Image (cartoon, rainbow, N blue to C red; front, side, top):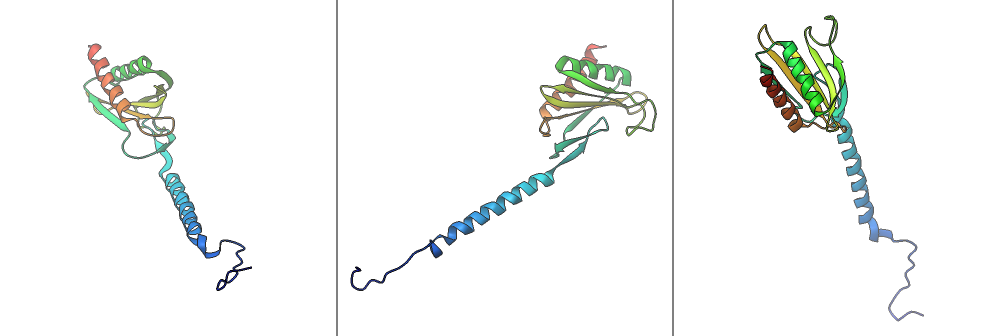
Length: 163
């Protein structure tokens, strides 16, 4: 029995009362796909200072260079010493001809420091000046400018102690 003046209403499902939740859910799913798409667009491969490629999130500069009035051999030895003192050298790259991806006279090395991937490249600028470029990335591919700058300055200190 029903009270007078009220009609019986059969409700099989929520009907119009929950339209807003469906709309919100669609918006959240669309936002999630858009976020994933942006991350995939930002991720990619970058060139390292040693001429190789590595997967990374390439936001901003990730290398630091210094020029020194020393021979390429002296700067390279200082770079190797800094890499060994702070981590481990994995690969040394010394081109034997000019057909490689790096210009002639360039020597580079790759190693790990504090679980970061580190690349160092030593190239003669002219007969008296040599440039060393240091690049560091985390295992996830993000840049580590603090470590890059620290290693480059340690190379300068190592060169100073070699005098």
